[in-house]
Amino acid sequence: MKKILLIDDEPTSRVLLHRALEKHGWNVLQASDGESGLQLAFAEKPQVVVCDLLMPRTNGFHVCERLRAQPDLFPNGKIIVTSSSDYDSDRRNAMQAGADEYLIKPVRAEQLLKLLERYHLDGAPAAPPPPPGSQSDGGGISLKFWGVRGSIPTPGASTLYYGGNTSCVEIRVDGELMILDAGTGIRSLGLSLIEEFKDQPISLTLLITHTHWDHIQGFPFFPVAYNPRNNIRVLAFEGARKSLEATLSSQMESPYFPISMQQMPGNIRIEELKDKKFTVGKVQVEAMFTNHPGICACFKLTTAVGVVVYIPDNELLQRLRASKDVRNVERSDSQEFARERDQALCEFIRNADVVMMDCQYDCIEYPKYVGWGHSCVDDSIALAVDANVKRFFLFHHDPGHNDAKITAMVDEARALVARLGGSFQVDAAREGLEVVVKPA
Ligand SMILES: [Zn+2]
Ligand SMILES: [Zn+2]
Image (tube, rainbow, N blue to C red; front, side, top):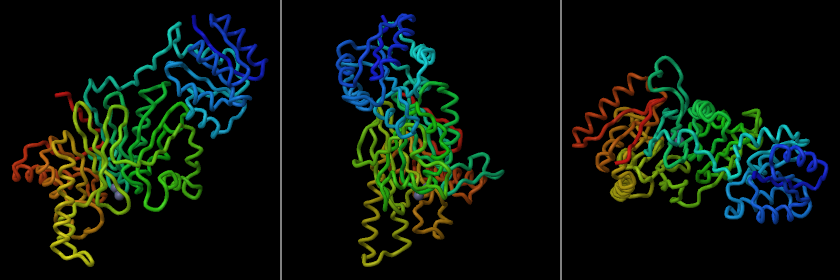
């Protein structure tokens, strides 16, 4: 029989819901404070706990946290928090504490029954449905480009083919939905996710390489972040001056944007990365700091199927140091240091299945932009040939490059691969392009 536990210190709301639920075949348990509610939940293992927020002896936030902390005693159970508070911060904190739903009081019985119907509970604890799309990768890695431009969006007739949105790449692997950077491309990605998931909650991990505008500017327009049922985990290293959270929220302060980051209704968990190696589900992630103004990382995702590396912003050091002497450093020391640093990146991408890499300039243009933090395509390609990668995408296209110019750069890059004895496929990243890495 379906079992539900009502925890609330107000007997009237409990009694009304109790009657309606019983009529619909539920075995209803009641508790009048948080502590006795927890005891009952662990002893009786109901499929659903409906819990008030403000209660004596353990409030609703802590009830959620403690239920979620004991998955063996409360396996896959749903938690519905009820509250008289309509403050966004209370809603957000409840969802972060582990609630599945947040209902404002008074809660009508029909409303609760309708919600319970959605859970499809039939006596057995409900397993969470697999996220839509997680199947579509067929056990491989699916990658889709939503923004491929560097620096600033460049819409217009001359950029229609490759696209004008700034950096954003979607990755699906091992049941994880991951997003690399939140440039303006993330808006269309969000709309597409909402279309796909319909009324199912969306959980995803957003990895941000650095907080330059072209990598975060889309976030205020990411529609997934406006639904309290969605969970967004944001991972990046701390900013050069302020914390990650302060840097991300400052672009939404009132002179720049009408809604603050704290007011976004989605469950947004911002985590400053401490280690260069960490995991997202079964995906092993390794970060490396790149040569770019401020704090900037690149990410390598290692999965059972293959390896994907994302290096949107990086100026390879050998050409930089050959073009420019460094104060107080001997030229020969400087160049040896540059060689070692570039070699370390070469090892980082070695044998990768897919590499997306900064190729903002060609080698004729580069001398005008020495020290701007971006590479020329020749150097990135040479590194990829040395590293024996399997597939390469020119990424972070210069806002001054139209479709014809990018196509010409791809042609040059392919010729260079052949000249250097490489044999991998080279393309320019293009909005809407999907790439699948199949299991070997
Ligand atoms: Zn950039
Ligand atoms: Zn940058």
